[in-house]
Image (cartoon, rainbow, N blue to C red):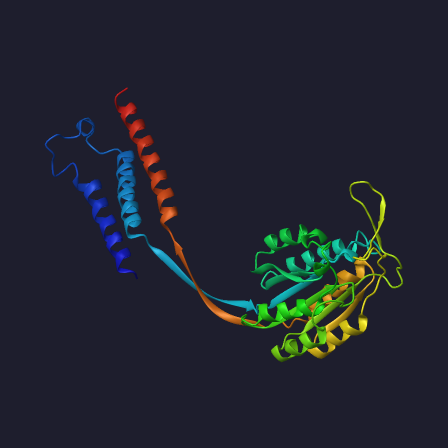
Length: 332
């Protein structure tokens, strides 16, 4: 037994005996006038003294601040590093997938993140150039808030060197970002286009393969959707999407490239033509990420100080109440 507890128990017994049996018999300079009127001490007085002894004991417990330590075994899942690469070129505004390609991608990404609370996430957005949008985080609500506010205006695509689809540059930035991360890392690429600017994606792929990062590619957009258009949120009119030369944009997904990126890196390729299939593909990616559980021993220290403080307040309240009742009953 804890020696401090032994001291407290002994002190409690000594104080109880002193207050209950010896207080009136050893004599005081100013005797209790209540005792003069009774040959025997009323039972309620004994109770009052016992409560006072308990108050002193509670104060001593508060000073000692006793704690209790519990050791338990907890299973923890392996933490994955997942870097998301999201294409935000203007073609992602196309509404062949409801409500639009970019909104469908954002909604499914948020659902995927909310189901993997133990993982670390990064985010890169790209059009003609990639931009690091979010450092690693495990705050799923904060990540979802950032993703919710992403749109094609994040990159000023009216400028010729910022428009296009720089898949290779985005992969290089992803490799550089994950190079210092510990643990298993994976890349998820969501795009609806064809690499037409920046470094050749196959060159960037060689570095990705050497680093051991699997690429999960999702091609988003319907087959044969023709000229792409969207609804202007301000006017409600249909607007045809155009490239930097003023020519109408058409759906042009380089499936062969995306399949190569995934197969050579050890990932998987998915073709999403509607929101339902897109949700299913994210489930497949989540299942592909190998989850290893390890058992660790954790020690949890529980402090009784708050409970003792509450008990002390309760005992003091009872003591004050009983003292008033005894006084009024014997001095009425």
